[in-house]
Image (cartoon, rainbow, N blue to C red; front, side, top):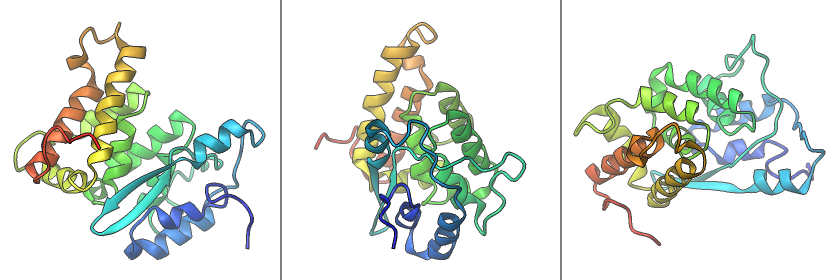
Length: 217
């Protein structure tokens, strides 16, 4: 039995996916490279990584870390070493290196699993972060999430209607990052892709029955 925190020993992977994906999640947890703390196990790293992002999925309560510090998979193998490359790619969307997160996202968006309910929170969470190039990748994929009745709207709305707090944080953080970092590139908040996606995803949830915008707790 390890005494390492849950975010270091990779046990978090098993808690981050539905029970039906237990074998795939267990394999990915076993294959993750060792925890690689670039700051020497500093309190900052532990605090940032230990923060959990909870979400509901068809009656199951799941969670993944806000950041992970496992070593990156070698570029020549990417995410193909596991029984489920999609599970591995989801895990690496939480990586502290933005280039690794972007590569993981691109892996997710290349296949049909991007529409799987258990993938949706990993994609959505990238929109409320500060790397606009990653946000733009999501926007380039979710071109029909705001089209009423489209497969994208239904797939993403069905998950987000279960997670109003995720939507609330998405809208707040998108506005905040635009204000802090991107006012020069995008003169108006309405032009910032993170904000546009936040509104579109909120409408997708509304299509599935959630109030829009979601109420504050």
